[in-house]
Image (cartoon, rainbow, N blue to C red; front, side):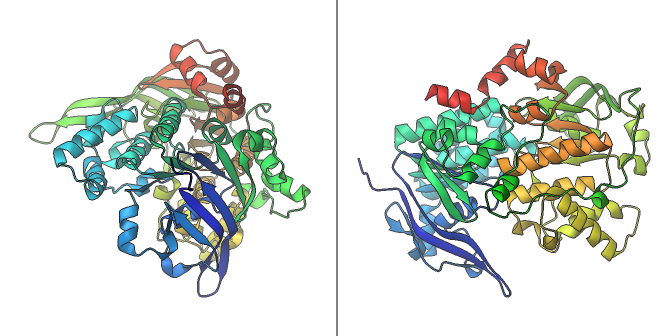
Length: 567
């Protein structure tokens, strides 16, 4: 068995260059990944994790990057010296990549079958029939029960978790020597996440496939990775065996990351942020101020009745059509759901991918129609409210990249809701955008940048700022922290709790991160196959569940304590 590293990065520096600026993204990093080894790369958003991974496959724009010094070797070959034809053979064949945002990584106009065929037939000499059999088997390996339906579906017809499982299946399709996984479990519920992580580890060990796992979930790192590298501001500040680094961190930044986790903290307490810890430790990182100007405009609403109610809410999607194009059968995504939410309260909905959580949230803001039932806001049917009142109900989507217009600077994106029915001046909108940036922890000087110039976590903060721009009363948060590293997650959770306490905001919070749900929630509802199978206080549901499905969810939650106990 070869002991030569599958990946060797030696003193690599990388700069992003433009006509008027140079950004040092990587500042002399060195790392190695051995055969069959699972190595984690952790660090906050913008630390250089994804840049390191993308550079290994030369996926960064050549004209906008410069490598002053350093070397990158993959499978014993100099990646920086490879031509495009050689790189095309390596990509997808010997090295596969699982991207963070599956909706943007998958082609929206091609079915899953065509996209899987493209990868398999490009790198393997097999027939289309054999490629189809392999594709369906790979989807089944990803614990997709209706693999044939998913195989013939378009990406938009699948949930976020389903799309991510398709990406992972494609990554395994050509038996690569190295899989680069950039936040591969971000969109997955805890049960599927546990299955996928076990599958990644088992396949890595059985086939000697190496895995480079980029993640902000330290519990996942503790559960899966043999070794870990901690990145901060383009540098590796700590490395070693996972149990040593996470169990007894030496660097102040690693300790700050662990302290920012909601796991083990008192619910609804303020979390320690990495920015504050680094300032105390001597590294001046800008804290996240809360500005009065960005928060102005909220009003109170009494608690005499629920702010929001769902009464037998049912959502169906057409499954088959007749000759005239009329639907003749349906899939029921939300099945007679009854829920209520009071002023100043956080109701969280948890459940596996495809259980109907997002469909329910989309029905509240009118993105999908109800087939049966009723939605009430302040005692009236939601659809009967005028446009001004409906502004009080806003949503933050799971995938920030696909929800932001790629052609607009963020000042326009964040203030777009303010222009509906009104014509505010450009200077007024830009000033508001600066306040919103401060509110969600972004540099106000970045308001002229485009979405692709931000990291995944930063894009999610832009989406949250946009939702806050019209001063909502009810905020629907669909996996709002799934793309955020633990440091920014702590900032956002603190922000949400601060705003809720001061302005009695109500949150419908959808998440598969049970530690986050436990920290922020007053009540929790558990959904399974479109139905609410259990609901109650957060303490009751998460600590002492009565439903068998809820117990299964809780047992699948990765925790640092459980990972170290199993080691």
